Length: 147
Image 1 (cartoon, helix red, strand yellow):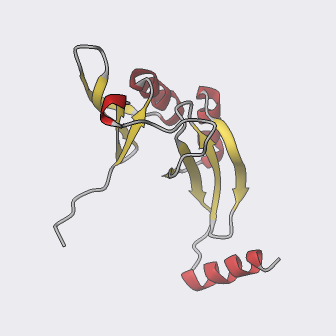
Image 2 (cartoon, one colour; image 1 turned 60 degrees about the vertical axis):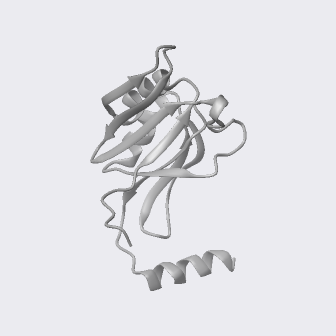
Image 3 (cartoon, helix red, strand yellow; image 1 turned 180 degrees about the horizontal axis):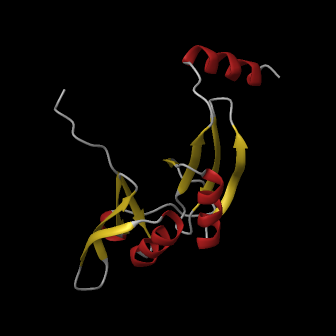
């Protein structure tokens, strides 16, 4: 196994400049830098959201790189763990995110909900409620599925 140093989410978006502004408003992102092509297309940008780095770029259809196409659901989501999920969820909605799953207290010890950003990417926002052991989590999960 190679010596792994980090794992980054890298988003392909339609209109990366607008996405950067959205992430600043929705998640208090800080733009670290961007690389812009002569056409104005953003070939690469990096944002800091809390302790994490989010990378993104404009779509490159000629290279087969496209972002999600709403209304189809994205095939993945980003879990953003925050101190106060109610405030963070409301902030993202004010910035233009739409609710996929409203905030609820979850069996795994977190209060969480899911949003879709204006670019089709899904975000699971959550806050810690309680520490749940894997065995207890499995017991609760099984109980939900047996209802």
